[in-house]
Amino acid sequence: MNTKIAFLSIALIVSTDAFCQTTDKNKILTSIKSNEATYANIARQIWEYAETGYNEVKSSALLQDQLANAGFNIEKGVTGIPTAFVATFGSGQPVIGILAEYDALPGLSQSDEPAQKPLIPGAAGHGCGHNLFGTASVAAAIAVKDWLKSSGSKGTIKLYGCPAEEGGSGKVFMVRAGLFNGVDAVLHWHPGNDNDAGISPWLANKSGKFRFYGIAAHASGAPERGRSALDGVEAMNNMVNMMREHIPSDTRIHYIITKGGEAPNVVPAFAEVYFYVRNPNMQVVKDVWERVVKAARGAALGTETKMDYEIIGGTYNMLPNVALSKIMDANLNTVGGFTYSAGEKAFAEKIQSTFQGAKIPALETTAKVQAFKVVEKQESGGASSDVGDVSWTTPTAGISTATFVPGSSGHSWQNVAAAGSSIGAKGMMIAAKTIALSAYDLFKKRAVLVEAKKEFLKRRGGDFTYEALLGNRKPALDYRK
Image (cartoon, rainbow, N blue to C red):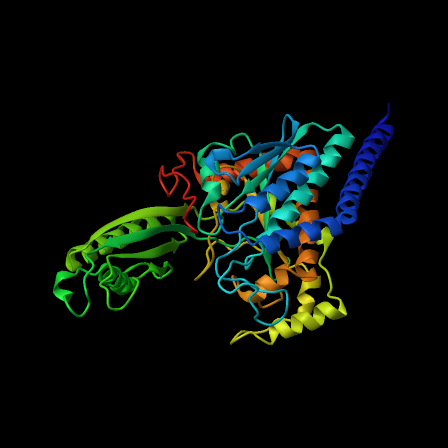
């Protein structure tokens, strides 16, 4: 064979392979699109269930049923968490994981109307859009499974059903149990205000409940005989608030008093406060947390009460992976954004009219994909997620899509309304398609997995040993009760 013929043969092989990959991807997109109505209904059902962390019984079961009916093997109740599961299809390498979340937030009940209107005052609502998160991830996993089966390709797809992301650190227990060992890459997404595969820092986080025990007494008739547990909580809060001046400025501390007594004329015998500590650096979180504990001990000593505390959650900061994120960015651009219908535009405009003190972005941003960028250090603020622990265990990357009205604040009634609407469903399907195409690429392009693993090991460091920030505690299955 002369050189010219050899060159043409190689070109033909490359061209044929590219054609096959394009055909495969089109089939994946068509498969997801043909089931959009079904997935929109599933997301709506989970939105209506609005189950908080570790209570997602119906939401988890609904997603498991979809996967089981599609041919996945379901391992239920993993790591001692009744609503956690792992769905697996295929065999051999590579092993690609997809994360799914489905917990709601307490106190955010809201109708799907563009005006604040709780469905059940005080009840939970999907203010972070996890009804969309779980559904889109399942849709992507099923589409990839269909391709694996029809093509006879080797490899394994795993869908991780992850409960209690909102403060319960569900994925941490899955990481700690080794459920991500042997996984080559993990893909995830999150509902957001725009379509973006860029990388930005997520904060490490540690949380816990501090409980003070005093002596009940008549607050007016015999106050000297009482010791107020609420005084202990308030003394602790005051000390922590003074401490803010003397900790790294990029640290965030939040708290709520979850129990403060029963009546003003009874000295409270029990009080409880729930604290979060966040920082981009895990060691800073550990150090600041120890100072918070010391404040609690001092408060108990000064108020002659007793104190104990329970670690509720703890999550790592996110370890970025540019190699994987670029794959997701390319596929997000292939899928593209979406435009509002006339009704959706009217809905979104009413939502935007409720924003307070915020610059209002154009609604047209939902039709665009943000330029890919990597932000290694964020100046201030930011969120936390137990996806961080996964990212320190195996190469991990994610995207956000425009499921909320541009300019919306996280954890808001506006988000709940959008997550239950057709706007949320449209953005959700962008995520499903992007994750499915990205997983396909990772099955076909093994060199990317090699590159991603090298980057992962370099960023993590050779002497890293995983230790959960929440220690050896069991899942706090009652933390929302």
